[in-house]
Structure formats: C-alpha cells, structure tokens
Image (cartoon, rainbow, N blue to C red):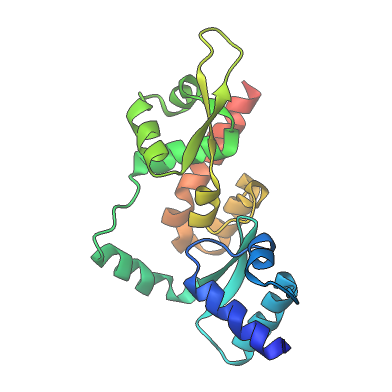
Length: 200
C-alpha cells in the first residue's frame, strides 16, 4: 500500500472516529502493512499547515483527533449553543476541576473545598462519564473515591493529566491576555483550592 493511500485512509478514519484514534486500533484495522500513526499524523499536519486548513491533528487521551484551530472557537461555541446540547454548570465544572487536580478524591474532601453539598453534582458528572468511581478510601466509613475518565481528557483536549495547566501557567496566560479570564477562571480557582488543600 502506498504512503499516499495510507494517509488518505488515516484522514478518513480521523474524520469518522468519534473517539481518539490510537495505534492499537490501527493495528486492528490494517491486516498488513500497518502504518505508524504518529508518523502519518506528522505528515498530515504538515499538509494541513501548508494548505492553511482550519483544523489540525492533536494528541488527545492517548490517541489522535482532528481539532479545530483556536481562532474558530467563537463560531464553534455559537454552533454548540444553538444545538441545544446540555453544557456543564459552573458547579459541575468546579467539582470536576477539584477531582481532576486532587484525584483520587472523596466527596467530603470536595465539599470541604467547595463549601457546599456536592452529591448531586458528582452524580451528574458520573452520568456524563466525566468521572468514575476509583475505589474506596481506607479512612472511617470507607468513602468512595472519584477520578476523571478518558472522556474527560477527550472533552477538554488533553492527552494526559499532566497536561492540566499549573497555577503559574494560568497566571502568566491571564497577565498576557486578560480576555482569557472567564475561560481560565475555573482552572485558576481550583488549582489554588487543590494547592491549599494539599498543604492543609
């Protein structure tokens, strides 16, 4: 199979796949002459850049996914807002950020940071597959512990948890571009909360 044909097949798979495309899945799709996904992605991204396309391929949740360029975010947000798709509430985003930064974490620790009951919000996040039950704590009552899912990484365009912004990075971004305030506020508040909780 020619390299050009492989590139076209991989591009089609990236467009069609609702989940990030991984090398493991590629190995199942191609019976012989399995292409190196990372290498093919590099070639496709070079082609997209030279053609000034509105999208590129990014490493997400252990695989690769087609992503729109940031400058088109406003238009995509308008599309999603008009689609009737349910969006996470501020309370859900707060709780999700706490779980992301402190996982595995129990409900009582989440509520200690937020200052309000979070059982309903956690249930919502479980139903949306943003978090899952990781196990039980060894402390009194053995409360459930929560952690984020691969769907969380995919939804927020992260490849791994270490890609979450650090407090210092958020502060630098806000200083450089104050208009990012609303978008970064959740990460800023909760990376601070997570840092404070870790010290206590």
